[in-house]
Image 1 (cartoon, one colour):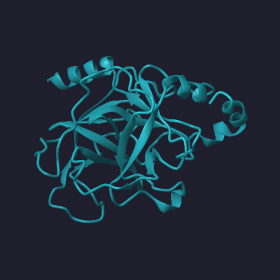
Image 2: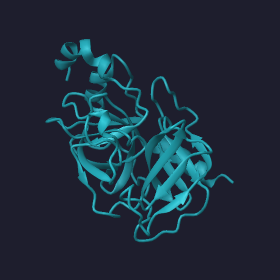
Image 3: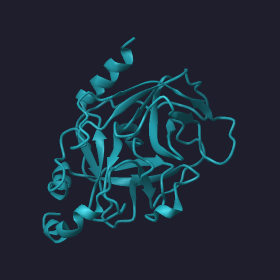
Image 4: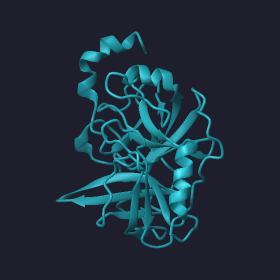
Length: 258
């Protein structure tokens, strides 16, 4: 990593996107309803929509990224597999309230995490379920294989659009130290972040999938935050908001508020 950075620095800035949304690159179609906690969030903006992923953590609350645009026009779908086909498991909600982390910094991407309350209570079923919050808060060991999923783009060609079906990908965790060495010219990788990188390239979570989960050992440990414009670059880690103990305490305190 450290040897590579000076060679890459001349083009590095050009590869960074504005982390509006992110995608699954080099993954595969998920088995329908095998990830019942996945949420599809879309917010109309003129003639287009801003799309993000999210995770159902209880029957009323979605965990997503703070940089994802949420407002009164946002629609959330649970139990979704194919965006183009009707499915008896799909439940559609509007938003009751949204709470970005109070220390979210859009310039540094720190604390890029947000809670969204559904307009009603989700009915848990075969197609709709929750994903538990972490039971441990230590850093995930580098090399650990974690998973992410979403409906974002499956290629780096934006003309291809986002995926119709839910896609999933397995990714190895990158050490925070190595991740910070790559990103140091643009962003400080803090204790509130964790990273993944596929050394061979071609696999990544990127545009259209922001806010989706990073799942390690069956628990959500991160939320898709930012990466490079060219998703799946073998030398540049993708970055996630890390659910450490402070973030976990914030989540629980916000959910308990009346």
